[in-house]
Length: 248
Image (tube, rainbow, N blue to C red; front, side):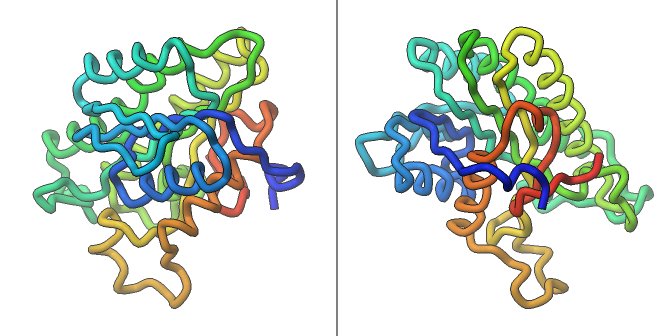
């Protein structure tokens, strides 16, 4: 176990989940509320709000910076202590991807995967990190994936997905280094949730061993536990659902 698991887990007083309508996002909202987080901004394309007085819904589109800027402006008077970006695609909505060989690479598909897995979360960071007051700790996390690790890549394939997550991990490292200069108590990380029972994993479960598929509520509890134990020393890295560091 990495040193992420050596301190008691904490729960924020306020949080924001981008992607609150997805299975992991919904579970994160529910887990934060159950743990006592008093104010939760819940963002989705539709703007639908989970049940509960602690939720404030908002709408956003990963490919529309104006919508992300508007969401950040709404939160500016009371910035959340935690921001979790629970978005991402493995296959596009039309079923395209992931590519198992370089022969199937298509520039248009790659551009869309990067737009959703890398550029969208980076745009959220651009507007949300700007809200964070100096002298106050905060956490910014984005769902990444173990297959985004260059050092741990032994199989190849899934080119656009792997590359988009590797690029996301690099951006998170960059943001962590930059924010540490002005916000030394900040934590900016990527999170690998494991293989979660969700629409993203649905087409790729046939080879999974028993016990490898995690229910969304269990995955959310794991991720919140990991986030609650991280410290600024670990900022800029990627951690899995156990709290172990994922290699670069």
